[in-house]
Length: 386
Image (cartoon, rainbow, N blue to C red; front, side):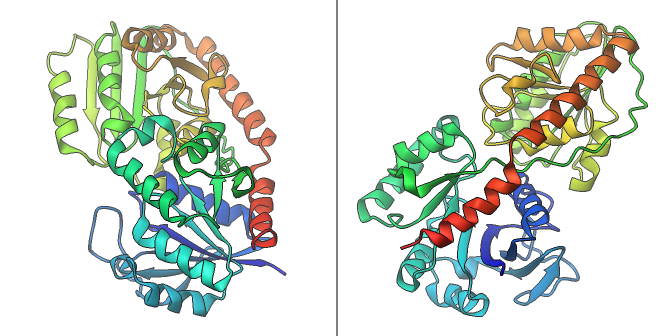
């Protein structure tokens, strides 16, 4: 008999602007539905918008892929135990799972309901307790965690950790015990071999950045690194304009580019376009300040596109010299050197690098047992709940 799991995720497909949390949940549903039934509660609109999805009826369970989804105006669920209880009464879940730790308006009433009804409650922080991320808006996050700890709101919950850093953050800021924390790495995008028809001439390079345009994703460092290059380089930027002020800083940096260097904003991509676009560039430049996982990195690698990443900010440091390169976050000159190394390659050298990408990523997704560990995590929560 399958586990019945009720998931609160903020946003779900067809949402296109919420990034990693939506991608993470889609991959879980796709890969873990043999042993689990997923019922998902999500906003009836996309991230940053208010207009409901066209053609999708709100407040009604709808089959979406392998899940049942309840699209609604999630603002009416905030601190609303009555509305949340109606959903729970309908689903009768074996487990309630919320992806997000910085949403007391949902987590707190859900924790109370679960405690009263003896339903296990699982929270996935999605990187928000990792050191670099936690120190952004630190006071607000710290006071929230202090309130949770003081009142014992999460004393009976389980936590989903995807990394050792996340485990340490849960222990440090939320006083989580070993028995509350279950490790299950993010499920990677499947390897999809694209026909990489892009040729590589020495002295030329096509670089891409695909992510939300805001400070955490660190586009400004990417722009500076490309601006320092010589020869011919095209740098195309894709992603939703989340922080206009930050984008203005990037535009200022793009002024007076050297001859042969071109930087272009190309708009936003639909999620199903991302891997195809990666296959059309020589490398993905992503000097992010912090990623719990970095689904966009997995998408680049799965499309055979080498990566140039910041060191120590993602779980992908071991990609260095295998499927790409890493550089210290604050060393712009080093980023430029790594890009230049790719720029100098001829077609044969570049083909070898791309073969290394496929080899690295294939080994990576085979070794982490992510699907099995997710299934075990759900079972553990249900069997060990008191």
